[in-house]
Amino acid sequence: MTEAADAIVPAARLGRVHFIGIGGAGMSGIARVMLARGIEVSGSDARDSDVVTGLRALGAHVDIGHAGDAVDAAQTVVVSSAIRADNPELTRARERGLRIIHRSAALGALMTDRRAVAVAGTHGKTTTTSMTTVALQACAADPSFVIGGILTATGANAHEGTGDVFVAEADESDGSFLLYSPAVGIVTNVEADHLDHYGTAEAVDEAFHAFARRVADSGGTLVACLDDPGARAIAHAAAARGADVIGYGTAQQDPAAASASFRTARVVPVEARGQSQTFTLTLDGDDIAVRLNQPGGYNALNAAAAVCTAAALGYDPAQAAAGLSGFHGTRRRFEFRGQAAGVRVYDDYAHHPTEITALLTAAKDVVDPGGRVHVVFQPHLFSRTQNFREEFGRALGIADDVVVLDVFPAREDPVPGVTGAIVADEVPHDSVAFLPAFTQVVPHLLDRVRPGDIVLTVGAGDVTVLGPEIVEALGGA
Image 1 (cartoon, rainbow, N blue to C red):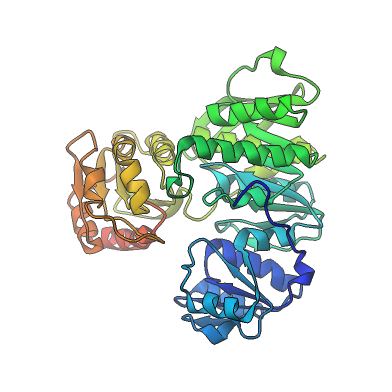
Image 2: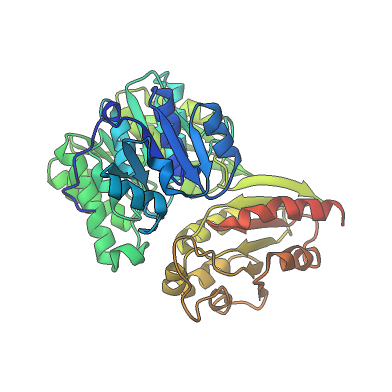
């Protein structure tokens, strides 16, 4: 994917659309919105799921398994970077000369007639997209949205709204976020990741600069976190090009940097208590009170991005902030899975060292006095595990007790010598175990947890299934 991306075809001209891997978080959300717009949708997935059942209920025809003839009735076939080149449906689509588009182009097709908000960043995209959606709903904007996760309160990851705003998570993993030219582009942070695609940290940085240029060149507003060095550099570069920028962060901003086109919003913490926090956001000289039922300084920054985005779109930032008090989180983002024997169990999608550092730091603030934090971590992708083994070890070392599982391969083939053991070896204390089999985890934890402790299951793979098992086992202990 390059900065000069292919033109996006409006959704109304796509005809019948077939999704290969329709049950995925991003694909299913796009399919839901297309169905709501009256577009015929079919798809396939490797396994049945609640997501697939929900899409069928909305009118989609979904096959389990991949067969070439599944695309025969389609005019457009949607794929993601996870679909291999030899997939039989993709092969058949090529043979028939069907339009084949990336998931990001399908998402872009839905945004062509809306004021788009594209949420980008190495970390925090899903939560920030969710918070922005909730903040705009509080302003009666009724935005359409597609989120790479599920809102806890509604169980939805997508919605076709009646308003003119479309909020979407913009995936940088394969460069496909460069398809968008949004009215508001958010950059939460910029760090080295997805090096299997980019190769170098410098290439990652340049991709985000290119994203900001697309925002600027379309007359949009860039909302960027000034606490993050990468995002801050992008904000100042965009402002130098004449873009409208709103920078948010916790530090006192240099007044000389502010201008009519470069506004700043400062986050000032007021109180953090358990899983709730309050802070003041100072924007355009006004102090806006924000109450958030989510722990962690990173969530305060995500909320600030949401409020700044509402302001950029012309909505009342105080009204947007008030709406965030009703934000109940996103599944797999510090999601409470249950409590038994005085032990609380949470689940989180964190799969990068910086995300794990933020998560475990927040967990230390939430755990009972005298309680300990236990983490069960599943590395995601062989390439990421190999590239960041030392950083993962240091991050996991924040926890009092660590379990490392084997690598969840996702789209990658195994790499000799790369297992979860190389991460466990980097944890800087002795309370760590490499357990390659899921069946080993529950007995191991039962011998180690005590009332007042927290257990977190962490990673982008299937580690999430362990949470209910841990709660059940603790209840019977």
